[in-house]
Length: 375
Ligand code: NAD
Image (cartoon, rainbow, N blue to C red; front, side, top):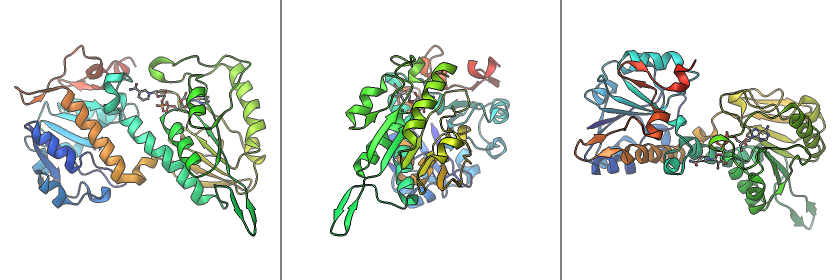
């Protein structure tokens, strides 16, 4: 089995393999071909891949005869000409926004698998690219906020007077939010956090932060489907807006991470609320790519509103390319090796397997995933 590792398109810094995963695939009996320069922005020079046992080549060389093609983001279908029919294409393929590309993969006979549709079950935790990348992004959001914030995070008692600790409020306590809380705490901030899932209350407390929760209207008890949130009732939204208004005026840094799968990001902070914040405050909107949690957010840009900087954070994991690649590459290895059939020297995905059904987009020339075919 030949595994091809693609060099990503411009703008993507991560790489779908690292020398460690190359060695592990070779130990499974596979051959690995890395496109020259694939690890360039992730601190993995070509010779490191060679030392690990991979061959290097241009796009056409690595695709030739490959049964598996690994990528971080879905490549342009045209750039895969020459790939074998039936080859697996595995990466973050962004199936909803890139529907035309998925159709083109099917037409080319590729078996596309979208890692971001990994089911959230215990068995799949080590394969979950959303978690691995969100964790790094949550950390980086706090670091970016600290860089823009014109004041210090920790309390400092000096001969020239006391510097008060920064007040950080994290909205949305999933994987990214938990890491943001932990990072802000380590920097010495006073941290509070909120979510609609009541299960997160204890998690917030266990990190030493203060939970801020709507108490008079029911939120989501326990975990929603697959651990995800759903859209809240208008009554809840109103109660949440009132709660946030009172709290936000006293905050220096707000990190928003709230997402609802398949829906635009919920609007959590209005322009009027931003106006109540002290000048120099910073908001990092980690949901910017999904429409934003904050009024006025522009994805990929910093905007100023009422003296407050709103950072429209876009794919923060990319700015930690070496670590993000390592985790992403291990997610891919964990996924493929879990289905590896030693005798066939290839992964075999049973049709009724929950993981295979979740991630598989195309098969035998057709789009087969229910989330795409259901309209
Ligand atoms: P996410 O990125 O979809 O959303 C981020 C957070 O925003 C979530 O905590 C969500 O509840 C919250 N949110 C949504 N609407 C909100 C609103 N209006 N106000 C405030 N907060 C709002 O979530 P995620 O980081 O992917 O994780 C969600 C859950 O899934 C977590 O409990 C996580 O532990 C769990 N999880 C399980 C697995 C697994 O078992 N394999 C893997 C990853 C995550």
